[in-house]
Amino acid sequence: MRVLITGANGFVGRELVRCLLARGSLRGRTIRSLLVLDTDLQGLPDDSRLRRHVGSITEAALIRRVLADGIDVVFHLVSIPGGAAEHQYELGYQVNLLASLELLNQLRNKSMPPVLVYASSVAVYGADLPAKMNEHAELRPQLSYGTHKGMVEQVITDLGRRGEVDGRALRLPGIVARPRQPNGLRSAFMSDLLRSFAEGAAYECPVSAEATAWWMSARCCVNNLIHAAEIEGELRGQRVWQLPVLHLSIAQVVDALAASYGEERRELISYAADEPLEALFGRLPPLKTPLARAAGFNHDGNATALIRNSLNPAPPRHLPLNGDSPHEG
Image (cartoon, rainbow, N blue to C red):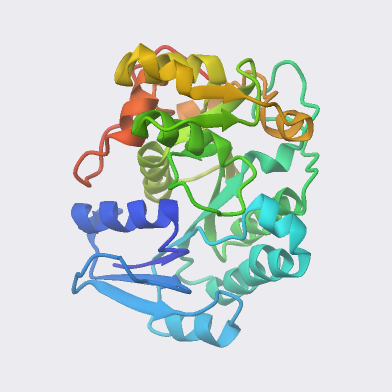
């Protein structure tokens, strides 16, 4: 089994690398080679199964070299985040759209179609969402990032119809808790809030306590990505899933943080709501996902589990998702 991860040194990518190395198998087969592609691969584990490819996903010749010996499963995670892609349109266009299309074109194989798991985004929905949502919500992206994600989803569905790439796209919510550093994500406040509270540092939240968002830990995200790769059998045309999410207000997250780290730390959190930011990322409605739940995808379970999974990572291994929780985000 040969597996490729693009964006392998990103926040989710590093967690996926650790988990796959610890598992040692995928789709019932031993992982002999784990190919990792990113512009910088420092800090990844020292493991003989890793095959490192340093460079940009925008280099078509590099993609050809990576795929030269064949590939069984691809996790396509690399992207320019929403805020950065909006301010640097050409870069986002090259990475998020053109490079993804080039990768898909090079993967086409009717005789042995590879499995591709694509990290899409809830950014495809845009803002001004209805009071309640489900998996059939209309796509109305308001950022170039979401527009490009939706376009790649369409190509994945088309190549699946043609039997050339066995693609599965997952729309990811806000994944936490990312390191506190500039990353181009306009939703970075979600992770910054968690990190600051856990570290006992003061934090001015750019959305109100009443703001509601869709949350998921990196650990839960990785489990869902792996589950997507392992779905067997006829997909009946279903190539795109909206992942189940935890629908939580900032106040609810702060309550869970206070229960874990101490009530006295509430005083470290202040609020200075940025209206445009809150309109995009702080007014998300409840989101029902029965199709994704039936397919075996899950969220973290509840706010307490979200905090535990995000800030107290267990040794890397494939952990069962909290599928027995009655809460549907």
